[in-house]
Amino acid sequence: MRIEYHTDTVKKYNEDIYGLTKRSAFVLDGASALSNNSYTPDKNDVSWMVNWWKEYLYLNIDDTTSTIQSILRNGVREFNREYGKFVDIDSLEPHEQLSAGIAVVRKNKNTLEAYVLGDVEITAEDKSGICYVITDTALKELDSEVIELMRRNKYRENEVVFKGFTEAELEILIRNRSRMNTDGGYFILGHSEDAIDFGIYKELDITQINRCLLSTDGIVPLSVKYSRETLLDQIRSKGVKNIIKELRGIEEMDKEKRFIGRLKTHDDATVVYLDFTLQV
Figure 1: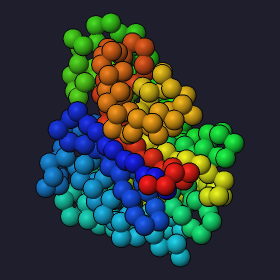
Figure 2: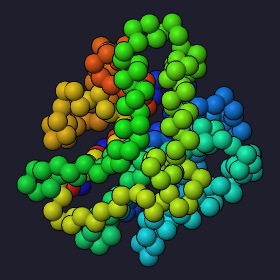
Figure 3: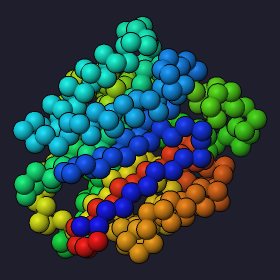
């Protein structure tokens, strides 16, 4: 099997992360904080969060005697205990809380287990060449209101007040964040154990899978150029680092986000590519 992976950011802190173990692969996409507060020694709490989860998953995710969901639920308990050493979690407003999308694949005998919580994605290509994308669109739908507002406002660059957002945009983002891990809102990895049960879980016959791609939503701009099937082909031929470099070029050509709807001009971007048909 051929495995390639890469994570890239244009910011000081990368709030994405990936990991590979003997049986598993995962990506996490930290949600940018809507607050200037910082409590951990890392100075960026979202980056601290995804790094904490990487170490936890390294130690626990390959235990196939436990379900992925039970491992994550226990992880939330441990994470809250550790983060709670820096701040009283119960005192935090939803927009001040930490959260991240997570995608995990794990080999369990002849089964490839796939789990997604949030707007990260797992793409699986079967033997017939058909691609299936596993993701939760709830957060994308909430973000679309902000993206449309950004697209309509030709003068927004002069109105930015916080982390690249205008006051009107920030108001919607904070309102949406208040719906985190609630019915009628969206579910994501955060401080809620119960949210884990709302993740999407699939079991795939690993003998029928050609390729698999785990990705954060930072790769969205590539969709204007490639179908998911074509993207897998491009990654196979060019390699993941060159694809991310190409992504940055596409973003640069649409700096004002007029044609490619997204919240940030340059989002963190992370991919893990698993090709079961190729030998290294």
